[in-house]
Length: 110
Image (cartoon, rainbow, N blue to C red; front, side, top):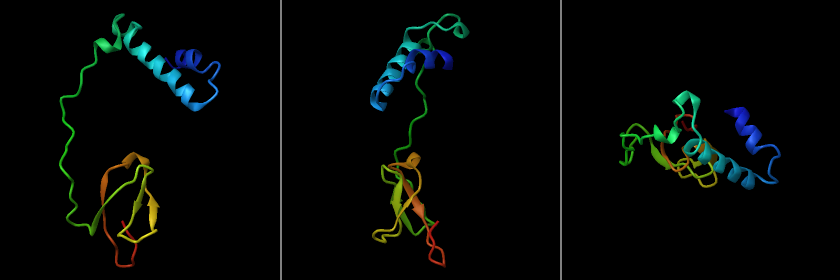
């Protein structure tokens, strides 16, 4: 699959990242909905897909043993304990999530 992906989408590469991503997106759509796969008995992956029955929790998380709850920005930063200008990069994987923060005796946060 990776050899096919590279041959059909990256040779030659597009001139910018947005155009390249569009090419990848089109290829993924075709790969999953139009092409039969030998490993699936010549069926398409879309024929096997079913959404998860698990629901995403919607309730607000609480951290009772922490001093504060802060929201991670879209770029992965948090402002700690309302200290203006004290921003720390955490992770973009947590963008939009609320996390618990606790101040240690020496002033550090965890």
